[in-house]
Length: 198
Image 1 (cartoon, rainbow, N blue to C red):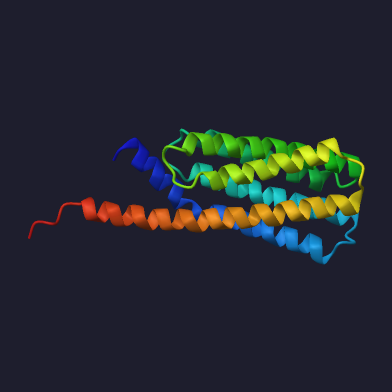
Image 2: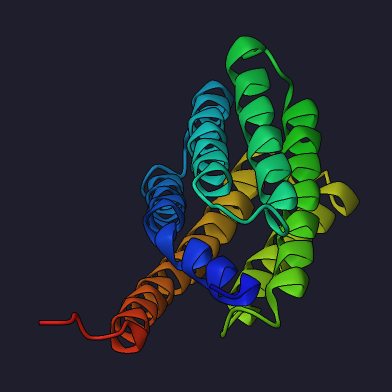
């Protein structure tokens, strides 16, 4: 099997992990809009849960592949997400500003790594722009929070909720597309296989 074909199959085999990441983002976004008066402590725990789930799904996706070339960034993104979530859980007394900068840093790092992964995958995966778009959304959130830290908890909840909802939708669409790539790849492999000798 050619290296590109192997990588393509690896990417398409982990569609479900990407779908779960997207679903977690959508649920997180909806919760922040349904409960706009959420307390800072609840927001910290909610963000922590989301970051850990997102990070674990990235680690799972990175370790389930046979080709290691573009997955270092995905693995690092997962580790950063898990670390950010654990910080939120173990230090729930974070102030609004500390939480804001924690989320901004997480968004900037994960967004940059997603953009890097999309660039590396551009010759192998069709529609890699969706992964790049999720990275751009993350970087935009990180910059928005870092440059304008003053609006307060309610604005922070709205920013993060809108980001998580948009990112979740993008990731779910990408996951569904990756599943179809997997089906196309399996069909192509079956077609190429020599017929059994009777």
